[in-house]
Length: 226
Image (cartoon, rainbow, N blue to C red; front, side):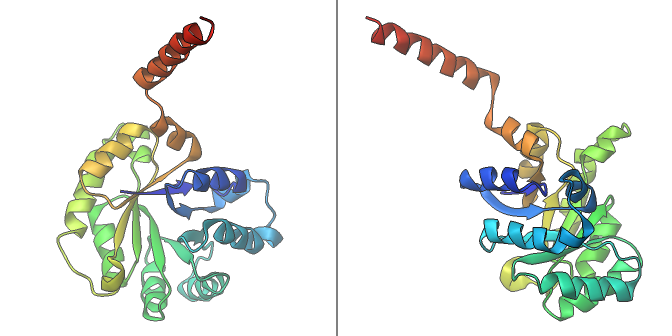
């Protein structure tokens, strides 16, 4: 499984990249707003992320509402850096935009996917990445992992032709809240997990690991102190 980081915070991206595990970045308008960034600085901010990630895919989300505006904004975003992926929310307007952008070689990450039919339509339209959400299902008392498994099984049944050389479309497990979300997504064959930095750090830790480290340190202190 590949790990993307779901953030627009440059410091978080730098630290995650330093671990040597990062395969990409996903952002959205809410994540950019959390950085305190201004509209005028948005594109420069995306370029900075692309530079930190050194060629890894960076999803920059369009806020356009019509197909024509999505295509125009998608082209503009894709021109910022060769590793930009245009992120579009699944809807009637975005499907033709995705199809037009894919036909020109622009990679699209179709987001806010909550069902297998949505994912299949996105794949058929030419999406390079498809982002089904997990945690938001859990928030309403549904089983997000079961929904994810349905999407994974449905999409992986077929070949789509657009991104064969790159192995796509790839499924990005989104709205990840816990290490168990990552574990179960990996077991069912999802290609990628995009994880907030706090949740990514939680994936590093385990109570037994922490206990073991404390014991090693305490025992070694005894050795040092004679």
